[in-house]
Image (cartoon, rainbow, N blue to C red; front, side, top):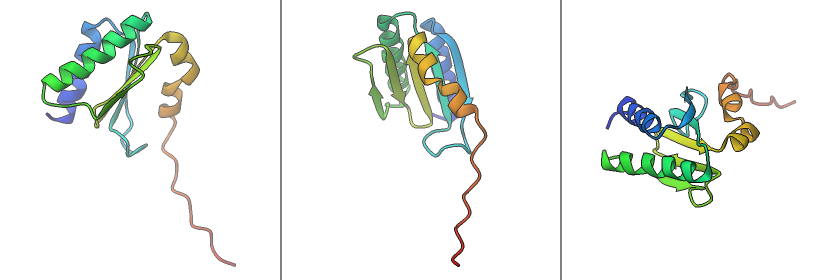
Length: 118
C-alpha cells in the first residue's frame, strides 16, 4: 500500500469512527520516525480504544500490519504505529496536556555545527 493510500485509509477510518478534531501533520523533514503524524480525539476511554483498534484492524485488513500499538488498554491515549503514519488518539484533556500539534508544527531544527577545536 502506498503512503498516501495509507494516510487516506486512516483519515476515512477516523471519520467513520467519529473521531473529533483530526489533525494530519506532514512531518517529513522534521523526524525520521514517520512521514505523517495524525492526532485525533475520542469522547471517552471506550471511544479512544475503539478508534485505535479499528485503525489497527482496517490497516491490517488492507495489508499494512501495525508495527505496534500502545495505550489501548487504558483508553486515555492510544498510539497506532503504521510506520509511514503514526496515529495518536486521545481524550481531550490528555491531548491538551501533550499538545503534540505545537510540538510537530515547529520548524525543523537546523543541523548543529561541529564545535571547532581550539
